[in-house]
Amino acid sequence: MTFNIRYGTAEDGLNHWQRRRGAAMARIRAADPDLLGLQECRADEQAEYVKSALPDYSFWGLPRGGDDATGLEMAPTLWRTSAFEALRRGMFWLSETPDVPASISWNSTFARVVTWVELRHRASNRALMFACTHFDTTATAIAGAAHVLREWVEAQGDAPLIVVGDFNAGQNSAAFAQLAAGGRLAEAFRLAHPGSAGPGATFHGYGQAGGHEAIDWILISPHLAVTTAAVDRHQVEGLYPSDHYPVTASLRWAETPGSSGA
Image 1 (cartoon, rainbow, N blue to C red):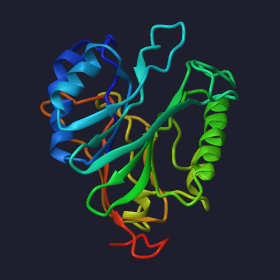
Image 2 (image 1 turned 90 degrees about the vertical axis):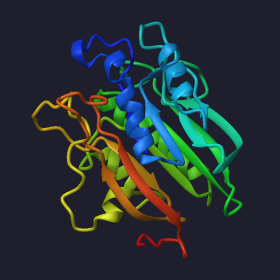
Image 3 (image 1 turned 30 degrees about the vertical axis):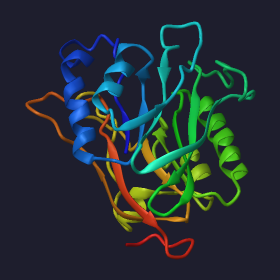
Image 4 (image 1 turned 120 degrees about the horizontal axis):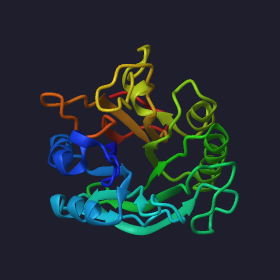
């Protein structure tokens, strides 16, 4: 599951985090994922609430940094402790100097990160890499971030990979093509629904109509196959869990590399 939960200090009026945080955790519990990537989770009482609401998960994430008010935001990875054991973990910045904390390139508005963890799947005793990110909103920064992320993906060799996030770009974008067209990764919803028009908008701005796109993706390597994938559009009387819909996929180990069906 990937879910941009909208940062807790946003001045969203009736959609403020304090009103919708229970609904957000309820959607996570409804999906019951073994792997979860969040975006816009602040390293303050928001993250503490998430941790307390999901005690059966391990949480790995650090603030992206910077001098502005968004410096506490994270893109954390979470995994169900009974399903996975953490082997290694790390983080890098989406910039020309990925190892420099809070570094910015390509006219990015904010510092942006990738948070990753290498996990051992307890049931199969196989390892995989799970990464979560949140791209910037400027076109040059999105292009640069896609390039840096693809370099990291290729550096993982033949390791099984799951990369999730809010990419702030649609699936007709150059960033999507760089990451999920003919490379090491493919997008889970498209694999589960071949020939479909795609998942539809995943950002909705608390139910606003408009030309929104599918900017939240689950990308997987050929070591994994998709059985189901969906966008969770749940809301109750106009109260949405976030301004993004969570995206989910059920995965299994592929019988042979490149298998994408059930």
